[in-house]
Amino acid sequence: MTPMGIDGKPSLPGIDWSRGLRYAAGNQALYIRFLKRFPEDRNMENLALALSCGDMESAFVCAHTLKGLSMQLGIETLSGPASALCELLRPRNAAVLPQALALCAQLQALHAQVVCAIQQL
Image 1 (cartoon, helix red, strand yellow):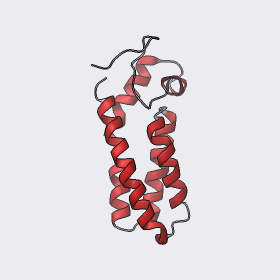
Image 2 (cartoon, rainbow, N blue to C red; image 1 turned 180 degrees about the horizontal axis):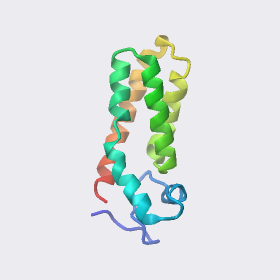
Image 3 (cartoon, rainbow, N blue to C red; image 1 turned 90 degrees about the horizontal axis):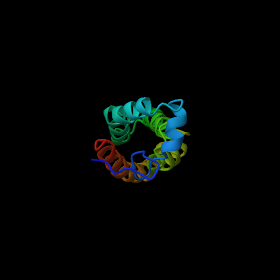
């Protein structure tokens, strides 16, 4: 069970509830539904797979999508690192692959923590 904050909203570390509610036009039930669907999103695993194959174009697309989704949902824990990885991958230059793989590993760990927290809703 997720602990409740003072304002009666679930307390999820690293998630800006106010930002997410704006995305859902203030509809808390809709926002919770969006959050609960987040663990089903496959961009994190597709990003890791693309990087492991050296597919910089697909990696960029997945990082960009993950960045946008996490920003819209107010998942600050992911939006910053996903944005950094996205910018690293933007030129689609294979020379940054070692650095991108390291950032991706960090992002995967954060993603797992966020998914675990969301699954407690």
